[in-house]
Length: 117
Image 1: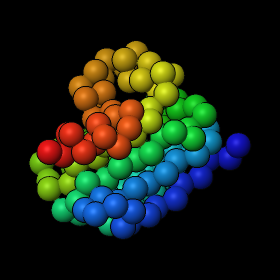
Image 2: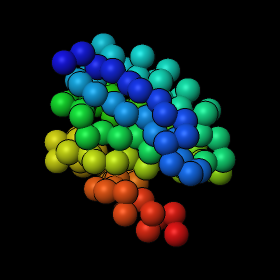
Image 3: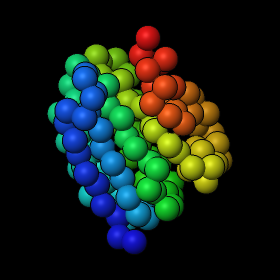
């Protein structure tokens, strides 16, 4: 499946959702980066949920884009959550030594609600 992104800026109150689908590797990384940072801009002062449920694969280039978004929003009013990361996506983070990024991973909306408080 080709990599696709879909932004829903008002999916839930105070939340924007970016849904990713397909395979994300070094070829799709530039387009992924544009989509992710467009979503970060739209989600300013909100929570941004990047839904990974339909991601079939993510290589280190795709992971780097997600980490870049997490780092870019670290000192802002926008919080990025990674929703439904597969075991293989979590493994890519672990292999890269980015355990801290896993703290933003949530398995369901209840986890996000609890994190938001």
